Image (cartoon, rainbow, N blue to C red; front, top):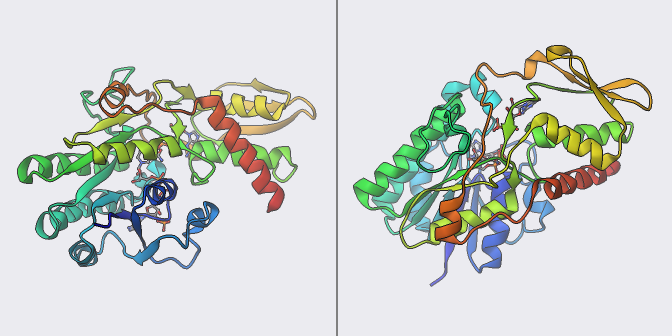
Length: 340
Ligand code: NDP
Ligand code: GDP
């Protein structure tokens, strides 16, 4: 029988890599995308797969549309990757974020329960749910302490998945993924903001980059490695939740320093707090400064994941380390800036 994967948020970073991966595995892939006046499928095009999958229009908040899709398609696997995924914006649109990331997931679970209980379901949970957990390493047993409307909405969805698994025996799993990046990462996220901004500065197309808190630490992995974990998780015999991470973390400042090293720029950090700056020693100009605008009402200072369970039970390990990831993103953004 034909294996069909339904992926919501098909225009996003993870969906592009996941769709490519599933197509290579012989799945028929159907993606859903909300209507937009701009091109929101550019990532599928950049991976050259836009004609290999079917894209249907659906906002995850349109409950009857989601029910209709589940009822008609009865997918073998359903990956819910659609989300208002930007933490900073969740403080500006908390209710919208909770509807898209929280209640909509409950509707998907209800649709599967009622119309296609054999469908295996994957939910995109997040390390942001740990927030200020108080432990320097987080695993599946670490208590959640969400610090943003994004994180609280994802925690609601996470517990809903757990509840539907226990109450109705659905094959439903949540991947607690730590930050993962790639050349296809959205430009508002800090890694891509830095690689794109510094590439523009390096090529003389921008003067200065303004950022927020450079002392928070993240466990940054490569998106292509992480979508393989999603597949392993949904495939596994017993549905369980897993932490997916690299086990190493770096501050935003260390990320900037790594880019500067790759670009071979001669620079120096000066000043403190909001006055801290990165100076280009070749011309004494400030290339990075700190701006209050990019600070959040409550911050997550330290995320570092322990992926022991995924390694042991799914035989998954990350293949791409920090410096390889940063190099890949800088190389891609230098090419991108030269072409645009
Ligand atoms: P992206 O922001 O790149 O993609 C999210 C997608 O969701 C976009 O295509 C967006 O559409 C779509 N979307 C947003 N709102 C709606 C809606 N109301 N209805 C339908 N689609 C909608 O995220 P990623 O690919 O990076 O992440 C995938 C998932 O994993 C998300 O759920 C995210 O929260 C989660 N996650 C991501 C992590 C990361 O580091 N990348 C870490 C942990 C979890 P459009 O293109 O139109 O904007
Ligand atoms: P998040 O972990 O999902 O919030 O991913 P982001 O890439 O948006 O942010 C990672 C960290 O970088 C957070 O601690 C932010 O506060 C910090 N940060 C510092 N400056 C910026 C900035 O200018 N933009 C973003 N997006 N984050 C910033």
